[in-house]
Length: 301
Picture 1 (cartoon, helix red, strand yellow):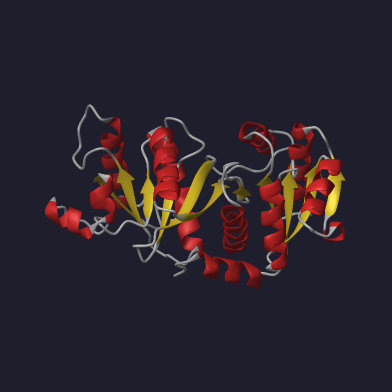
Picture 2: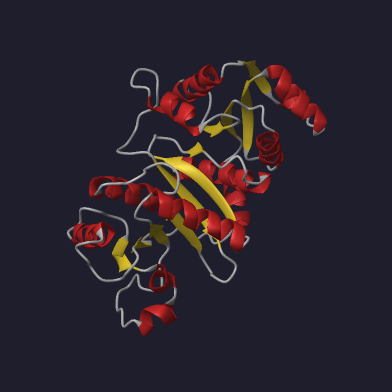
């Protein structure tokens, strides 16, 4: 099982350089990350966006122009459409979001006539490495689905499980994160958790073990689970943390990054190919990790 980003990068490198289509590529951190990934032998890239701005950023960072194909497209919507087209025609393996709003690139992906094939539901999957733990945490959903229904959560779990499988975790432990660890009819997340556990036990959700409801502490800490008297295979051992809504997912993801200096990656799953989507504030290293993760997942699924 893969337990660190160095190994993800090594595995992605082993798949040979894959072509990445970067939509609205005129972004300093994005282009630095793309160059790091190219130097690592993970990707080649087609840069779509304002050619003059892209070339200026490349020059400022001493990145050779000739290493990249640049498609001049100043309109961000059209840049996203062209990135999707490159994937659909087989010229690129996957897409990376550059200096463009998430909503714009997702509209291009979801376009019924020209977009990508969507399997169920798009959801953001974060992969984070916290120093004190010996494994990755896969967190979903922190960027896409505001108030997911129970049907949505089935898709969110399935997308996260695909990422865990690509990391070599054949039967990941999925914790449904709630404010409390007991079912309370007034707290819908706990009701959803119990139903999803039943669906997993009935074989409707496959490839994982689903447990919950769990508070965060007894999902990740064996001591906290023992103290609460919780006896379940997922208790204290969770690999995947499914949050009740976007607000919780977003805060959990960013608090781990900023308070714990956690190394991270983020991709969108559900569109047939992973989409590299990170916050504009994320570092070049996080973006590099995300590129490597996308290549790894695309080649495993």
